[in-house]
Each structure stands twice: as structure tokens, then as C-alpha cells.
Length: 172
Image (cartoon, rainbow, N blue to C red; front, top):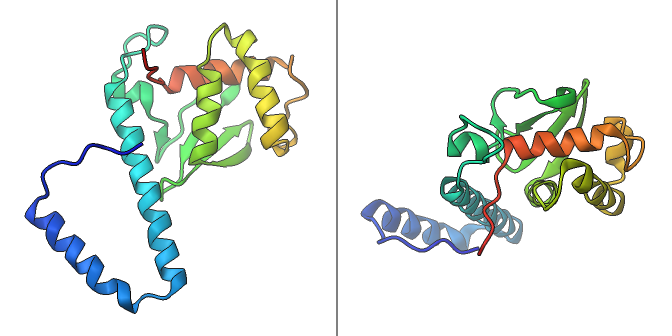
């Protein structure tokens, strides 16, 4: 997931030196926090890069690459069954919202959910795969979003919604 490094700027070098100078004064908890934040930021950079490189979705005419690859940030984006996704201010979690109910997922979970929804087949074919993932990894989703089973029409609507909001670039 590493992003190719660009030539180090003077500002980058100065900030890196400042960070290195602060490290001896941090305790283990502070270091663990910085490492986690760095990983999250690197992940966000990679998601942004992939979103920019992703071709526009054919089933989402008129959407820009950014619109096709990014969730709503700072505002709702309604979809089928009133689904919407809000990204947290920190960018480390996503809230899947439907009918006044919401479920929070971390970035890795959200990426997995989107990959499953974007998989092969129609939304009716992808819905049982997504349901199986929720059942295995996040069964709390069902009660919180009112999903009754793998054939529940809301699962297909969720897949359709996710496909309309996110584009995943596949490697040839």
C-alpha cells in the first residue's frame, strides 16, 4: 500500500526533523498513537490516490472521478432506502445511516464492505456475499439497520447505493 515517494521538500524535511526531535520525550502511549495516526494517514493517501486513478463508473453517468470514489464528507448523501454515508471529521470512521439508524465502521471495514458490494454480478448476487460478511464480522449491523436476512431487499439496495458512491479500481 506504499505510495511512491516524491522528492523531499524543504518543508517535509523540516517537519520530519521536528518530529524526530520530539520522539525521545514521548512515552510508549504517545508513540503508539503517532504510529497509528501515521498508518491511518498513509491509508487515506492511498485511498485518495486510488480514487483519483479510478475510471468513472459506467453505471453512474455524469459523476466525476472524485464523486464516484469518495463518500460524503461533512454532509449527507441520500441513496436508495435513504442510505447515506458520513465520514467522521478525523477520517478514521464511517457512519452508514438509514432511516434514522446508524452503524459505525472503521476504514478497513468500510473498504471491505465496498469491495464486496463492488464485486461481480448484480446487486441481488452481491447482497448475499455482503450479508455473509456482516454475519461473520459485524452481526450488530442487522439489528441497527433493520436488515432481516440475506434476501431482504434492503441488502440489494445497500449494494446498489455503495456501488453508486464508490468505485474500486481493479488490477488487470
